[in-house]
Image (cartoon, rainbow, N blue to C red):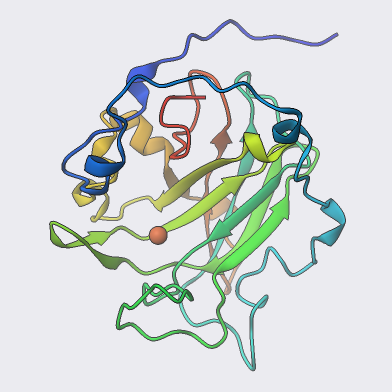
Length: 241
Ligand SMILES: [Fe+2]
């Protein structure tokens, strides 16, 4: 028998407003007219579909998956957690992808002109499928903070971008995780568009000494709730999901 939880009404105040002048990009990109509903097509539901067989055993290990002649430089960490639905049931076999800056705060991307050096042994991308209990884990380097043009030079807290693919591309959810105790979190103009401190806390990975690897890596735990009242905030679903 399938267990179902209590109905949890969507809380629209959980998500930040589309127009938040402190985060300047929202001024031009926020809608000025009422939103329209667009019917889903069979193309939205049927494809493209991710082929699970193309996952490489090293894809989850950013310390080694792009290494040239050594290992990535920086603070070695494990980032792990579970993907859960609105009733705290695990979401198995879903693709979790991450991308991030290196230890100096620099992305390996043509548009990143930050003066911090690239790391020849760090690509900054990884992916993994959740197991039967919805668990995922990455080995990586703690990313550095980096400056960006908003109000002069603002600084992004250390963060990792993260995507949950779902069963079709139309379901893809995108968010960012931050690190417990980072003093840049309360200063971030992007995070400050989120009104409820509990929603920010849900985006903050917690130090997890129980999962650290002795003489190797610290561990951080980050659970992801894909739907419902306790949903993680997803930046590609500002209206809620
Ligand atoms: Fe970023």
